[in-house]
Length: 163
Image 1 (cartoon, helix red, strand yellow):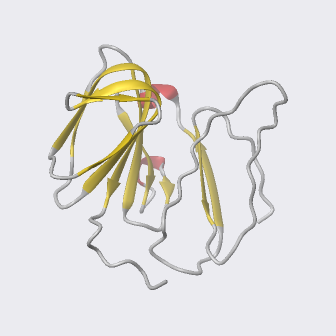
Image 2 (spheres, rainbow, N blue to C red; image 1 turned 135 degrees about the vertical axis):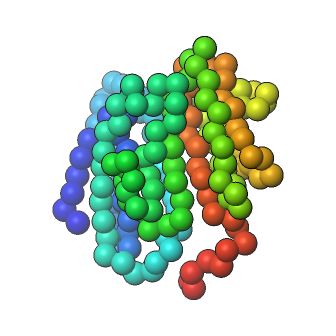
């Protein structure tokens, strides 16, 4: 696609490979380490034109709360994806708490990218994740430098596109 960029903390990049694309990621710094997540989502449509998006989300928009970063319709200046999924990012320290009500007939996935946090009384550390079903609310509390992703996902039972 002829694009290239440097991703810094707070940035979210969304690339849809669509009908085909070549890509690579690497750390430009010879001294500093790098930590990033690469998450793959199966699209709802096949063989679409490749697309690239990148946005920086301010820390204050995620501090003590979840900020929508990816959605099917680009709501709230989020990146637009061709799938029935919403991804939120939040930053939590001690004293910051948020309760999220899960939509009916959906499930969630929690991933702790950094730090630690408690969700509904269960402790999570860096790298931990959990698929959540049969819950109506999730309370995030007792964060210690926690960076958390929350995925609002369609039920698995929905038919997948023809492969």
